[in-house]
Amino acid sequence: MMGGAGMMGGMGVWTFLFPLLALFAVAALLVFGAFGIRALAEDASDETADAESDEDPVERLKRRYAEGELTEAEFERALERELSEETGGTESGLGEVGSDRRARSEPARER
Image (tube, rainbow, N blue to C red; front, side, top):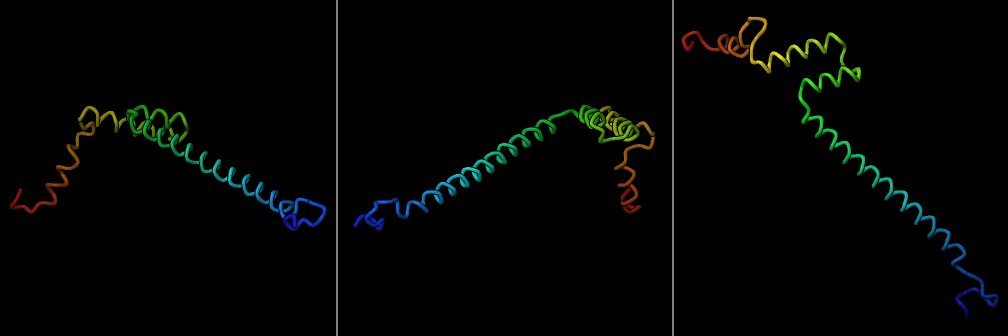
């Protein structure tokens, strides 16, 4: 016998099996390609996040304002807050925030 193809010697089972195997091979390539692209995209976004964390707070505010994430009022408020934190002073004259809160929370005999 000649592999079940009869006397004609045709392809037999391969007639149906080969296209099926080719389909699975193409599907596997598409799946691996999609996962590869996703992995590369995640690596790129991680690098972008690292670059943003290294960014100066004032530069980050400028970038967010330029991209439209902040309104002008929000930008100015945040910029004043960052600049006052950098200088270490309190422009409002109210003193340090933590010291007043601490004094109010301690009992009178411990002050």
